[in-house]
Image 1 (spheres, rainbow, N blue to C red):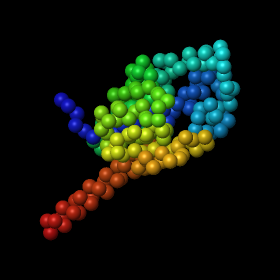
Image 2 (cartoon, one colour):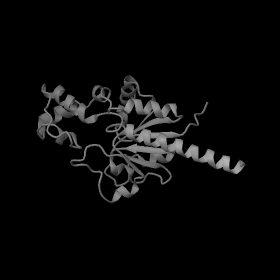
Image 3 (cartoon, helix red, strand yellow):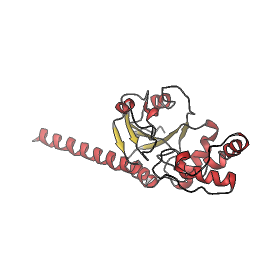
Image 4 (tube, rainbow, N blue to C red):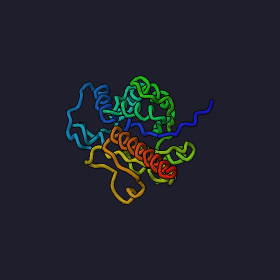
Length: 218
């Protein structure tokens, strides 16, 4: 049977899953040392942790850590699991749309399910250097009512009728500034804040429709 529930599309890293924490664990796996935190308000993992900029053999060794095991074991963002269950209970289908190589899509799906996320569909778009979001084409096909991401450039090219919600996250070095903010319809501290706002907005809209109907009857 075809599922006709409205879809909310959710980014993974920075929205559902904590890539920055996983980055430190990947460093420990590669080099045997868990890095200390340099700046808890840094957007990028490289700036958050006290780590060196790598090259040559050490860079290759670190990149090798970003394998299926890594993408299958990223910890959840605080409050994200509960937020997803609230959206699910409200009648939405949740789809993870991630700029991840397709070869790791199944590892990401298992990762989400292992944490208890009510998400069993992951679309991996890969990442491109083009100005248009690599997620835009997928979103044109999915036609979600909302799309939540923490990376402003991924809002470029998203269909106008999709509610674009930006998770701001840590501010230091954030790419979430500039003219493309005009593409964003709402901004939130995290997924939990978005879910609370979205569901409250839906409840208010339903109350308004009920009041209008009562007025028409009267």
